[in-house]
Length: 115
Length: 247
Figure 1 (cartoon, helix red, strand yellow):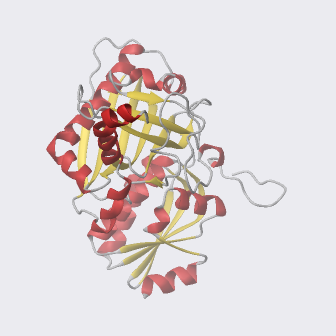
Figure 2 (figure 1 turned 30 degrees about the vertical axis):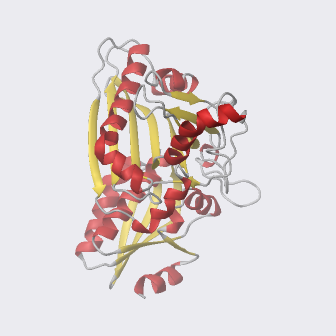
């Protein structure tokens, strides 16, 4: 297993969480902490950049659901970018794409998040 | 990730996930009605109506010398045998593997004449866990993951669900006792598995959290697929069908 590394970039009301490595249920503390920091800094939309994602199991997908609920509870939303074809299929299969907007690239995701 | 000659990287988890699916087919399952599942879409915790619950049931297997991988192999192979008595799980002929569909016959109230016919799809499976996703019509819009891991010197088994009652009737039933019955179902299942592998008096730790108290009214139309309504209608019309020879 490769550890989860999350880097936060903030651009006004939009924050980007750059996710690298594996996403499993063990990633919860790091992901929630990063999201909390983004929200505390005023982000109303959080972009999840999956371009360096190497592995995700069903625990990782479940984690995205709880993150989504947290975002919605605070009036925020989640946007995704950087998904490979494989992970786009997983988002579609799990119907996560009905709640998290997916964009082909970061500029499009930032534009959507800032709208 | 590995890098095949084609250039597109292959994720380590590629083989663990079900492939794309639009509508389910339960043709690979023998022994149960498949009309409650065939043709249905999968549905998860984002598509349900009721409040969202995260439930975690955990049992340490003290004194049991089995690796997590061996434990999961047993659980997959004999999954139906660990269910509480009276509840039926019809495994796919090729076993619990990504994309396979299983059928269920559940008695919501033990001894009552109504049996709920529904199913699940295997969303994900690896050596240490497997996850089911429910179809439209199931009382819960849910993912449930069964896993085993080493914690210190002990192998621990776990069932963790993210679930919403699918429609307003299911939500009402959940509030009126269904939630507690559901908890008992998984507690008993884990106890049965633990006893099977040699734990004399298993103790199940249950962490039950409502993580979203909002109801999703945009999904009230889930009622049209309700397996509960379908099953109740079948039960009530069974005498008439018998008289007319329509089985």
